[in-house]
Amino acid sequence: MKEYACNVCSYVYDPALGDPGNGIAPGTPFEDLPDDWVCPECGVGKDEFSPLED
Amino acid sequence: MIEGNALREGIHWVGYVDWSVRDFHGYHTARGSTYNAYLVRDAKTALIDTVKGPYAADLLRHVAAYVDPANIDYIVCNHAETDHAGALGEVLQACPRAEVVCNEKCRAALSLHRDTSAWRFRVVRDGETLSLGRRTLQFIDTPMVHWPESMFTYLPEEKILFSMDAFGQHYASSRRFDDEESLDVVLAEAKTYWANIVMPYGKQVAAVLEKAATLDIETIAPSHGIVWRKNLPAILAAYKDWAVCRPHAKVLIAYDTMWGSTAKMARAIEEGATKQGGAEIRVHFIRASNITVLATEILDAATVALGSPTLNRTMMPEMGGLLTYYKGLRPLGKAGFAFGSYGWAKNGPNDVDAALKDLKFERLREPLTANYVPDDSVLDACRDAGAHLARKAVEMAEAFEG
Ligand SMILES: [Fe+2]
Ligand SMILES: [Fe+2]
Ligand SMILES: [Zn+2]
Image (cartoon, rainbow over all chains, first blue to last red):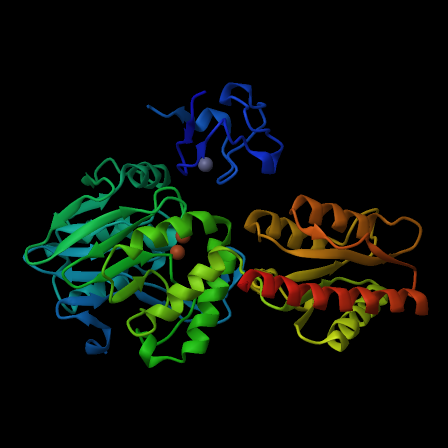
């Protein structure tokens, strides 16, 4: 599963960890995040995220 | 005056002291502020940051004491926010050959504020350096401290970190350096600044502190308030604690009230907490206080009791405003409960309770309520709950140390 970084604040969404603080279970791929999910650090939407190159 | 502004030979403060500002986008700046800009004269001349828009002429006058502004080669923009870049357009008109040195995000943000088509940008990347002759500027991205484009400028030959909003204080003074001031006052204003401006970005600050730890720093020159050259260990230690919202043995009680019932409950909670001992107790009637002070109070509190009666089927609006402010600031790891009086519906205290849940505070009990007026049994329950807050605060502070 691919990690995605926030273009605005550089927060990295790691699917292995999810975002439990905001109800996202570990193991949730970025693509499966709900449309209203926002960056837990700066508040922007999913469209402000880019896949990390490995 | 001029000598008092020297950070080093050839490096001077040229900013603006705003003695009278009391409302900084809602932040109650009780002691005014300063917008700090710094002039570095070498083979090339660089201006680091500017000031709020209305004070462009003051900045240029301060610069002119050392050098004709037309001779400025670079204007570094560490942060695109208006209090530092607002004067940039007007300043550039007096500095025809100056390039604006900033990162790509800053260039974009500056260009969204105004027409920059005539500006000459020199876009720099994280870690990049720019030689001024004998001395060098190094740029360090610090995203979200305070905005996405924020960066520090480091001057290795002089061990100066130009840290933009970080380590700043809204504090107007005729003096520039921490050793000329009462440390208590400057630290208190740095704490208020942290709580109101930087608190949401504690994680990013921790990362920045790690980055900065690799630099050799003797002077921290922020973009507001006093320059740190003596008490660096004190402010760095404070930042470390604030970045994790380190709880002290401190109880915060804040409330609004209509006819005095919720105020009575607050005083009973205070009584219980005080009698328990061991913790500092702070009590605020919200409408006699303000959100700026209450942000600072919660930063190092361990436990909180927030009270509102029911008004128009919900909590009172000042409490709603405070909780909205807290929601954005995201104080971490607090515990507490809601309280308040009601006539026929408990929505006031219940809505406060829901907000505490939303803030991810540990809730120590169900909302403590009084039907119209607290009777003796309610007041006893308030005293018990207050004692619990104090005990818990002591525990949390000790657990954190241990
Ligand atoms: Fe800022
Ligand atoms: Fe600022
Ligand atoms: Zn983000």
